[in-house]
Amino acid sequence: MAGTFTFTIIKPGAVTNEHIGPILNEINKGGFHISAMKMIKLRTTQAQNFYAIHKEKAFYDALIKFMTSGPIVVAILEKENAVEEYRKLIGSTDPAKAEEGTIRKLFAQSMQQNAVHGSDSDCNAAIESTFFFSKSERFSIFDRREF
Ligand code: ATP
Ligand code: MG
Image (cartoon, rainbow, N blue to C red):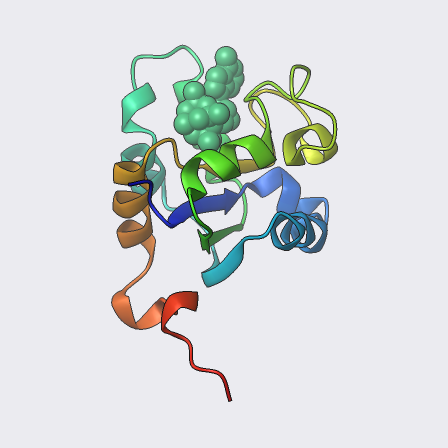
């Protein structure tokens, strides 16, 4: 069964360009619930851990520099089949190839400064969410009571 949550980062360029609000609006319009969120600045070691899979790539050093260049917004998003649905909402890694109406088409500046991160599997969504949020900072929509 597909998972019900994914993890996202609004990257430094998008924060600097005042795109936090518009991106969150797209996320809500896409039917996602925000179940955890905060603004932080990554330390170099955190960025290196997060992107360890790309360590051998030519763009790695520039990516670490970029991701630590300013504040980011990290969040956990809930929806049925969240990982796949969110990858559809954000579009291709390269904004030039991203589909019309996707978050990256709307807000990305380049392949590196592509506005947002989205988890690529349920397993990574769980790892990434735990990396940034403690249990007491997560508020699942499935646990909320009406009042
Ligand atoms: P993310 O993991 O951030 O959601 P993604 O899964 O679409 O993006 P990855 O292949 O995991 O893409 O690459 C991670 C990030 O590294 C990209 O979002 C982008 O910021 C940067 N990146 C990837 N490929 C390149 C490239 N060829 N040149 C510069 N930066 C790149
Ligand atoms: Mg990725």
